[in-house]
Amino acid sequence: MASLGQRHGFRIATHLALALAGFWIGRHLFPDLSGSGILPRGQHSSPGSQSTGSAVAVGHPKPAPVGIRSNSRDSGRDSDWEALLQTAQGGDSDEILTRLRALHREPDLSRQILGQQLLIGRLAEIAPQRALAEAAALGGTHERAMAETVVMARWASTDPVAAADYLAENSASFGMLDAHQRRITGAVAGAWAGSDPTAAAEWALAQPVESRGDALDAVVRRVAASDPERATEILNRLPEGFERTELVRSMVGFLAASNPDTMAAWSLRLPGDSERITATAWAVQSWSNQDPESAAQWVSALPEGRVRDAAIASLITGSPFLQSPETSAAWIEQIGDEDLRLSARQSLDFRWRTLDPDTHPSSGDGSERP
Image 1: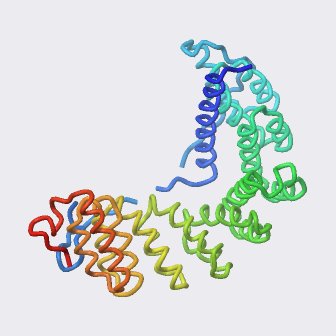
Image 2: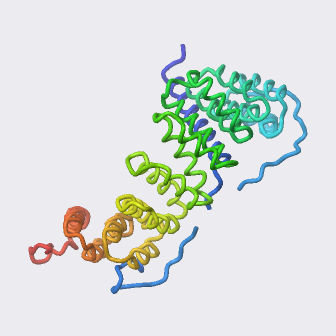
Image 3: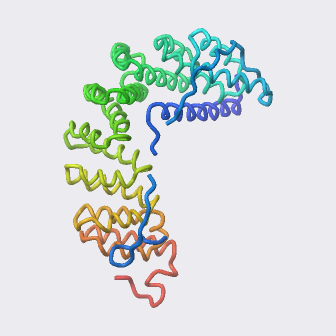
Protein backbone atom coordinates (compact mmCIF):
# COMPACT_ATOMS: atom_id res chain seq x y z
CA MET A 1 0.00 0.00 0.00
CA ALA A 2 1.31 3.45 -0.85
CA SER A 3 2.44 5.63 2.01
CA LEU A 4 0.73 8.92 2.82
CA GLY A 5 3.65 10.77 1.26
CA GLN A 6 3.43 8.72 -1.94
CA ARG A 7 -0.29 9.29 -2.23
CA HIS A 8 0.22 13.02 -1.65
CA GLY A 9 2.93 13.09 -4.31
CA PHE A 10 0.67 11.31 -6.77
CA ARG A 11 -2.13 13.83 -6.18
CA ILE A 12 0.27 16.74 -6.80
CA ALA A 13 1.56 15.14 -10.00
CA THR A 14 -1.98 14.40 -11.15
CA HIS A 15 -3.17 17.97 -10.58
CA LEU A 16 -0.09 19.36 -12.34
CA ALA A 17 -0.55 17.13 -15.36
CA LEU A 18 -4.27 17.79 -15.55
CA ALA A 19 -3.59 21.53 -15.39
CA LEU A 20 -1.19 21.17 -18.32
CA ALA A 21 -3.70 19.04 -20.20
CA GLY A 22 -6.40 21.59 -19.47
CA PHE A 23 -4.18 24.31 -20.90
CA TRP A 24 -3.69 22.18 -24.00
CA ILE A 25 -7.46 21.76 -24.38
CA GLY A 26 -7.95 25.51 -24.07
CA ARG A 27 -5.36 26.18 -26.76
CA HIS A 28 -7.20 23.86 -29.13
CA LEU A 29 -10.78 24.78 -28.24
CA PHE A 30 -10.41 28.55 -28.09
CA PRO A 31 -8.43 31.01 -30.21
CA ASP A 32 -5.75 33.07 -28.58
CA LEU A 33 -7.03 36.29 -27.26
CA SER A 34 -4.97 38.62 -28.09
CA GLY A 35 -1.13 56.16 -10.70
CA SER A 36 -1.64 59.02 -13.32
CA GLY A 37 -4.61 60.14 -15.33
CA ILE A 38 -7.21 58.37 -13.21
CA LEU A 39 -8.89 61.31 -11.55
CA PRO A 40 -12.51 62.00 -12.56
CA ARG A 41 -13.27 64.38 -15.40
CA GLY A 42 -12.71 68.00 -14.70
CA GLN A 43 -9.78 67.30 -12.38
CA HIS A 44 -7.21 65.50 -14.49
CA SER A 45 -7.10 63.97 -17.92
CA SER A 46 -4.25 62.49 -19.90
CA PRO A 47 -4.31 60.11 -22.81
CA GLY A 48 -4.07 56.42 -22.07
CA SER A 49 -3.40 53.42 -24.17
CA GLN A 50 -5.13 50.10 -24.37
CA SER A 51 -3.38 46.97 -25.38
CA THR A 52 -5.53 44.53 -26.74
CA GLY A 53 -2.73 30.93 -33.02
CA SER A 54 -0.70 28.47 -32.91
CA ALA A 55 0.89 26.46 -35.67
CA VAL A 56 1.05 22.70 -35.39
CA ALA A 57 3.98 20.93 -36.95
CA VAL A 58 3.06 18.26 -39.49
CA GLY A 59 4.82 15.71 -41.58
CA HIS A 60 6.94 14.21 -38.79
CA PRO A 61 8.54 10.86 -39.50
CA LYS A 62 6.74 8.04 -37.73
CA PRO A 63 8.69 7.17 -34.57
CA ALA A 64 9.77 3.68 -33.66
CA PRO A 65 7.60 2.18 -30.88
CA VAL A 66 9.94 2.47 -27.94
CA GLY A 67 9.25 2.98 -24.26
CA ILE A 68 10.27 5.92 -22.13
CA ARG A 69 13.33 5.19 -20.04
CA SER A 70 13.46 6.02 -16.36
CA ASN A 71 16.45 8.33 -15.92
CA SER A 72 15.09 11.89 -16.02
CA ARG A 73 18.53 13.27 -16.92
CA ASP A 74 19.13 10.79 -19.73
CA SER A 75 19.10 12.50 -23.14
CA GLY A 76 17.69 9.30 -24.61
CA ARG A 77 14.60 9.65 -22.44
CA ASP A 78 14.13 13.21 -23.67
CA SER A 79 14.34 11.92 -27.23
CA ASP A 80 11.66 9.38 -26.44
CA TRP A 81 9.46 12.14 -25.07
CA GLU A 82 9.94 14.13 -28.26
CA ALA A 83 8.98 11.03 -30.22
CA LEU A 84 5.84 10.69 -28.10
CA LEU A 85 4.90 14.28 -28.90
CA GLN A 86 5.37 13.57 -32.59
CA THR A 87 3.11 10.54 -32.29
CA ALA A 88 0.51 12.71 -30.54
CA GLN A 89 0.58 15.05 -33.53
CA GLY A 90 0.50 12.58 -36.39
CA GLY A 91 0.79 8.94 -35.33
CA ASP A 92 -1.52 6.13 -36.38
CA SER A 93 -3.61 3.95 -34.06
CA ASP A 94 -0.98 1.25 -33.58
CA GLU A 95 1.79 3.75 -32.73
CA ILE A 96 -0.48 5.55 -30.29
CA LEU A 97 -1.50 2.35 -28.49
CA THR A 98 2.13 1.19 -28.30
CA ARG A 99 3.18 4.44 -26.65
CA LEU A 100 0.20 4.36 -24.30
CA ARG A 101 1.30 0.94 -23.07
CA ALA A 102 4.89 2.15 -22.69
CA LEU A 103 3.77 5.07 -20.54
CA HIS A 104 3.07 2.67 -17.67
CA ARG A 105 6.84 2.47 -17.24
CA GLU A 106 7.28 6.26 -17.07
CA PRO A 107 8.47 7.17 -13.52
CA ASP A 108 7.54 10.86 -13.83
CA LEU A 109 3.82 10.88 -12.97
CA SER A 110 3.16 14.31 -14.47
CA ARG A 111 4.68 13.22 -17.78
CA GLN A 112 2.81 9.95 -17.64
CA ILE A 113 -0.57 11.61 -17.19
CA LEU A 114 0.06 14.39 -19.71
CA GLY A 115 1.34 11.86 -22.23
CA GLN A 116 -1.85 9.84 -21.81
CA GLN A 117 -4.02 12.89 -22.48
CA LEU A 118 -2.05 13.91 -25.57
CA LEU A 119 -1.99 10.43 -27.09
CA ILE A 120 -5.66 9.76 -26.43
CA GLY A 121 -6.47 13.17 -27.91
CA ARG A 122 -4.68 12.16 -31.11
CA LEU A 123 -6.44 8.79 -31.15
CA ALA A 124 -9.76 10.64 -30.90
CA GLU A 125 -9.10 12.24 -34.28
CA ILE A 126 -8.85 8.91 -36.09
CA ALA A 127 -10.81 6.45 -33.91
CA PRO A 128 -12.90 8.34 -31.33
CA GLN A 129 -14.80 5.39 -29.89
CA ARG A 130 -11.57 3.44 -29.48
CA ALA A 131 -10.11 6.50 -27.76
CA LEU A 132 -13.07 6.56 -25.37
CA ALA A 133 -12.45 2.92 -24.53
CA GLU A 134 -8.80 3.73 -23.76
CA ALA A 135 -9.87 6.69 -21.64
CA ALA A 136 -12.31 4.53 -19.67
CA ALA A 137 -9.50 2.08 -18.91
CA LEU A 138 -7.33 4.70 -17.20
CA GLY A 139 -6.87 4.11 -13.50
CA GLY A 140 -7.53 7.46 -11.84
CA THR A 141 -10.94 9.10 -11.81
CA HIS A 142 -9.53 12.54 -12.65
CA GLU A 143 -7.35 11.15 -15.42
CA ARG A 144 -10.27 9.28 -16.95
CA ALA A 145 -12.57 12.31 -16.77
CA MET A 146 -9.99 14.58 -18.40
CA ALA A 147 -9.23 12.04 -21.11
CA GLU A 148 -12.93 11.59 -21.93
CA THR A 149 -13.31 15.37 -22.14
CA VAL A 150 -10.33 15.59 -24.51
CA VAL A 151 -11.75 12.83 -26.71
CA MET A 152 -15.23 14.30 -26.96
CA ALA A 153 -13.85 17.77 -27.70
CA ARG A 154 -11.53 16.49 -30.43
CA TRP A 155 -14.30 14.34 -31.89
CA ALA A 156 -16.69 17.31 -31.96
CA SER A 157 -14.09 19.44 -33.70
CA THR A 158 -13.99 16.99 -36.64
CA ASP A 159 -17.49 15.45 -36.61
CA PRO A 160 -19.72 17.36 -34.19
CA VAL A 161 -22.97 15.64 -35.16
CA ALA A 162 -21.51 12.19 -34.54
CA ALA A 163 -20.04 13.31 -31.21
CA ALA A 164 -23.33 14.87 -30.13
CA ASP A 165 -25.29 11.75 -31.14
CA TYR A 166 -22.89 9.54 -29.22
CA LEU A 167 -23.27 11.72 -26.14
CA ALA A 168 -27.07 11.56 -26.38
CA GLU A 169 -27.05 7.76 -26.73
CA ASN A 170 -24.45 7.14 -24.04
CA SER A 171 -25.06 9.97 -21.60
CA ALA A 172 -25.27 7.63 -18.61
CA SER A 173 -21.67 6.51 -19.16
CA PHE A 174 -20.55 10.08 -18.41
CA GLY A 175 -22.65 10.39 -15.23
CA MET A 176 -26.27 11.35 -14.78
CA LEU A 177 -26.19 15.12 -15.30
CA ASP A 178 -23.36 15.45 -12.81
CA ALA A 179 -20.36 17.73 -13.13
CA HIS A 180 -18.54 15.38 -15.52
CA GLN A 181 -21.45 15.12 -17.94
CA ARG A 182 -21.92 18.89 -17.88
CA ARG A 183 -18.23 19.35 -18.61
CA ILE A 184 -18.44 16.89 -21.53
CA THR A 185 -21.51 18.71 -22.88
CA GLY A 186 -19.67 22.01 -22.73
CA ALA A 187 -16.62 20.52 -24.47
CA VAL A 188 -18.74 19.23 -27.36
CA ALA A 189 -20.62 22.52 -27.70
CA GLY A 190 -17.47 24.65 -27.61
CA ALA A 191 -15.65 22.53 -30.20
CA TRP A 192 -18.75 22.48 -32.43
CA ALA A 193 -19.03 26.27 -32.25
CA GLY A 194 -15.60 26.50 -33.86
CA SER A 195 -16.98 25.17 -37.15
CA ASP A 196 -20.72 25.96 -36.99
CA PRO A 197 -21.76 28.40 -34.24
CA THR A 198 -25.41 28.43 -35.31
CA ALA A 199 -25.80 24.65 -35.16
CA ALA A 200 -23.84 24.50 -31.91
CA ALA A 201 -26.11 27.13 -30.35
CA GLU A 202 -29.23 25.25 -31.47
CA TRP A 203 -27.89 22.04 -29.98
CA ALA A 204 -26.89 23.78 -26.73
CA LEU A 205 -30.34 25.34 -26.35
CA ALA A 206 -31.93 21.89 -26.71
CA GLN A 207 -29.93 20.33 -23.86
CA PRO A 208 -31.53 19.52 -20.49
CA VAL A 209 -31.68 22.52 -18.20
CA GLU A 210 -29.06 20.94 -15.91
CA SER A 211 -26.40 20.99 -18.64
CA ARG A 212 -27.71 23.69 -20.98
CA GLY A 213 -25.86 26.45 -19.16
CA ASP A 214 -22.48 24.70 -19.62
CA ALA A 215 -23.18 24.14 -23.32
CA LEU A 216 -24.31 27.71 -23.95
CA ASP A 217 -21.42 29.10 -21.95
CA ALA A 218 -18.93 27.21 -24.14
CA VAL A 219 -20.63 28.37 -27.34
CA VAL A 220 -20.89 32.01 -26.26
CA ARG A 221 -17.25 32.15 -25.15
CA ARG A 222 -16.01 30.58 -28.37
CA VAL A 223 -18.08 32.87 -30.58
CA ALA A 224 -17.49 36.04 -28.54
CA ALA A 225 -13.71 35.69 -28.86
CA SER A 226 -13.99 36.67 -32.54
CA ASP A 227 -17.51 38.07 -32.93
CA PRO A 228 -19.12 39.60 -29.81
CA GLU A 229 -22.16 40.74 -31.76
CA ARG A 230 -22.92 37.23 -32.90
CA ALA A 231 -22.55 36.06 -29.33
CA THR A 232 -25.11 38.69 -28.38
CA GLU A 233 -27.55 37.21 -30.87
CA ILE A 234 -27.18 33.84 -29.14
CA LEU A 235 -27.70 35.45 -25.73
CA ASN A 236 -30.82 37.15 -27.00
CA ARG A 237 -32.37 33.75 -27.63
CA LEU A 238 -32.76 33.48 -23.87
CA PRO A 239 -35.24 35.49 -21.80
CA GLU A 240 -33.89 37.82 -19.13
CA GLY A 241 -33.25 35.96 -15.92
CA PHE A 242 -30.66 34.06 -13.94
CA GLU A 243 -29.45 31.80 -16.77
CA ARG A 244 -28.90 34.68 -19.17
CA THR A 245 -27.27 36.84 -16.51
CA GLU A 246 -24.81 34.06 -15.67
CA LEU A 247 -23.89 33.73 -19.34
CA VAL A 248 -23.26 37.47 -19.58
CA ARG A 249 -21.15 37.33 -16.43
CA SER A 250 -19.10 34.44 -17.81
CA MET A 251 -18.62 36.11 -21.19
CA VAL A 252 -17.52 39.43 -19.71
CA GLY A 253 -15.21 37.76 -17.20
CA PHE A 254 -13.63 35.60 -19.89
CA LEU A 255 -12.99 38.34 -22.45
CA ALA A 256 -12.47 41.39 -20.25
CA ALA A 257 -9.14 39.94 -19.13
CA SER A 258 -7.71 40.57 -22.60
CA ASN A 259 -10.11 43.11 -24.16
CA PRO A 260 -11.70 45.11 -21.34
CA ASP A 261 -12.40 48.18 -23.49
CA THR A 262 -14.19 46.07 -26.11
CA MET A 263 -16.26 44.32 -23.48
CA ALA A 264 -17.14 47.58 -21.74
CA ALA A 265 -18.40 49.02 -25.03
CA TRP A 266 -20.26 45.78 -25.76
CA SER A 267 -21.92 45.87 -22.34
CA LEU A 268 -23.49 49.23 -23.12
CA ARG A 269 -25.38 47.66 -26.02
CA LEU A 270 -27.14 45.00 -23.97
CA PRO A 271 -30.91 45.46 -24.07
CA GLY A 272 -31.93 45.07 -20.41
CA ASP A 273 -31.18 47.88 -17.95
CA SER A 274 -30.10 45.59 -15.11
CA GLU A 275 -27.99 43.43 -17.40
CA ARG A 276 -26.35 46.47 -19.01
CA ILE A 277 -25.49 47.98 -15.62
CA THR A 278 -23.98 44.83 -14.14
CA ALA A 279 -22.07 43.83 -17.29
CA THR A 280 -20.55 47.29 -17.61
CA ALA A 281 -19.54 47.21 -13.96
CA TRP A 282 -17.82 43.83 -14.38
CA ALA A 283 -15.92 45.00 -17.47
CA VAL A 284 -14.79 48.23 -15.83
CA GLN A 285 -13.61 46.39 -12.74
CA SER A 286 -11.29 44.23 -14.85
CA TRP A 287 -10.18 47.21 -16.92
CA SER A 288 -9.34 49.33 -13.89
CA ASN A 289 -6.81 46.73 -12.76
CA GLN A 290 -5.11 46.56 -16.17
CA ASP A 291 -5.16 50.12 -17.45
CA PRO A 292 -6.68 52.46 -14.84
CA GLU A 293 -6.01 55.61 -16.84
CA SER A 294 -7.89 54.43 -19.93
CA ALA A 295 -10.67 52.97 -17.81
CA ALA A 296 -11.06 56.26 -15.95
CA GLN A 297 -11.25 58.24 -19.18
CA TRP A 298 -13.90 55.91 -20.55
CA VAL A 299 -16.00 56.06 -17.40
CA SER A 300 -15.63 59.83 -17.25
CA ALA A 301 -17.16 60.12 -20.72
CA LEU A 302 -20.29 58.13 -19.82
CA PRO A 303 -23.53 60.09 -19.52
CA GLU A 304 -24.88 60.55 -16.02
CA GLY A 305 -27.13 57.81 -14.83
CA ARG A 306 -27.22 54.36 -13.27
CA VAL A 307 -24.71 52.83 -15.69
CA ARG A 308 -22.12 55.52 -14.94
CA ASP A 309 -22.75 55.28 -11.20
CA ALA A 310 -22.19 51.52 -11.23
CA ALA A 311 -19.12 51.95 -13.43
CA ILE A 312 -17.60 54.42 -10.96
CA ALA A 313 -18.31 52.09 -8.05
CA SER A 314 -16.45 49.32 -9.91
CA LEU A 315 -13.66 51.58 -11.15
CA ILE A 316 -12.52 52.46 -7.65
CA THR A 317 -12.14 48.79 -6.72
CA GLY A 318 -9.12 48.55 -9.03
CA SER A 319 -5.75 48.22 -7.32
CA PRO A 320 -4.46 51.72 -8.27
CA PHE A 321 -7.58 53.29 -6.74
CA LEU A 322 -7.39 51.14 -3.61
CA GLN A 323 -3.90 52.55 -3.12
CA SER A 324 -5.08 56.13 -3.55
CA PRO A 325 -8.03 56.88 -1.27
CA GLU A 326 -7.94 60.56 -2.19
CA THR A 327 -8.54 59.70 -5.84
CA SER A 328 -11.31 57.29 -4.90
CA ALA A 329 -12.97 59.95 -2.77
CA ALA A 330 -13.02 62.37 -5.69
CA TRP A 331 -14.67 59.77 -7.89
CA ILE A 332 -17.25 58.83 -5.26
CA GLU A 333 -18.53 62.39 -5.19
CA GLN A 334 -19.51 61.99 -8.85
CA ILE A 335 -21.90 59.11 -8.11
CA GLY A 336 -25.40 60.46 -8.63
CA ASP A 337 -27.38 57.81 -6.72
CA GLU A 338 -27.43 58.87 -3.09
CA ASP A 339 -27.60 55.37 -1.60
CA LEU A 340 -24.77 54.06 -3.77
CA ARG A 341 -22.67 57.16 -3.03
CA LEU A 342 -23.19 56.72 0.73
CA SER A 343 -22.30 53.03 0.55
CA ALA A 344 -19.13 53.83 -1.43
CA ARG A 345 -18.17 56.52 1.09
CA GLN A 346 -18.57 54.14 4.00
CA SER A 347 -16.53 51.45 2.29
CA LEU A 348 -13.78 53.94 1.47
CA ASP A 349 -13.82 55.38 4.97
CA PHE A 350 -13.32 51.97 6.56
CA ARG A 351 -10.55 51.04 4.13
CA TRP A 352 -8.83 54.41 4.53
CA ARG A 353 -8.86 54.28 8.32
CA THR A 354 -7.57 50.72 8.31
CA LEU A 355 -4.83 50.96 5.71
CA ASP A 356 -3.60 54.53 5.99
CA PRO A 357 -5.00 56.23 9.10
CA ASP A 358 -2.36 58.97 9.07
CA THR A 359 -3.70 60.46 5.83
CA HIS A 360 -7.38 60.10 6.74
CA PRO A 361 -9.08 63.54 6.83
CA SER A 362 -9.96 63.05 10.50
CA SER A 363 -6.37 62.36 11.57
CA GLY A 364 -5.31 66.01 11.91
CA ASP A 365 -7.99 67.74 13.95
CA GLY A 366 -10.31 64.93 14.99
CA SER A 367 -13.06 66.07 12.64
CA GLU A 368 -14.96 63.56 10.58
CA ARG A 369 -15.04 63.57 6.81
CA PRO A 370 -18.43 64.76 5.63
